[in-house]
Image 1 (spheres, rainbow, N blue to C red):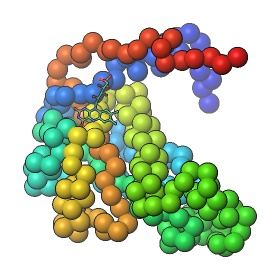
Image 2 (image 1 turned 60 degrees about the vertical axis):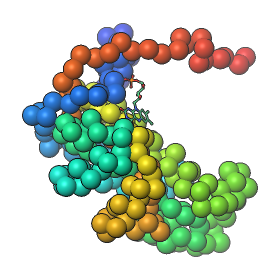
Image 3 (image 1 turned 90 degrees about the vertical axis):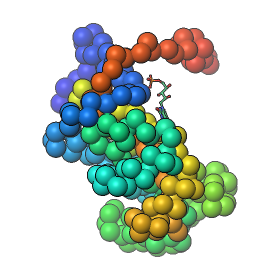
Length: 224
Ligand SMILES: Cc1cc2nc3c(=O)[nH]c(=O)nc-3n(C[C@H](O)[C@H](O)[C@H](O)COP(=O)(O)O)c2cc1C
């Protein structure tokens, strides 16, 4: 276990964040190695989620025809679809509630605990969704799941950056059209999943633009 404590190690972290940028032009000929890809997707898989219910699925799109079709409905993904080594669509699971089979599956099969809809944990989850977070319609539930998909998205971006791999996060697509396309192809069951966000990964083939951010004092307020 490395304890990140020296100034050099701290600076390394910040350097990685400065080097990462939303890559617009990828090198078509440079592919991510399998061990690097496995590390990136493992960071996605190990990401935390609310109550541990992992309301996501990752699609690694390798099919050239599907990539071509997606360019027509994913304006913000064209650069990635043209040159990125790997292209990932992150799906958010729909209707994750205490009565959904997914929650029972997670509790029984993944966490290895007997599922009981009236257990204190189940009641807590129900109350959290219905009262605390007002997740009382399909859209609210989908958006809650989508928010969580940005955790694996972020972990994958950061791990890629640490490995010297470039990325582009992507929301530039027509969600209804991509959902329908994937459903028509039989890739997703639209009752269970919808598209949340996408990610292109590969190697840059351009100079990095200047990084612009609000100064710390504009985004951090210390409440004493
Ligand atoms: C959630 C999200 C969605 C984004 N969607 C797109 C996109 O569709 N296409 C694109 O080229 N860049 C996209 N970006 C990249 C942003 O424009 C970029 O991250 C931002 O301008 C900051 O620049 P930097 O990442 O290069 O530091 C997206 C970024 C995020 C975080």
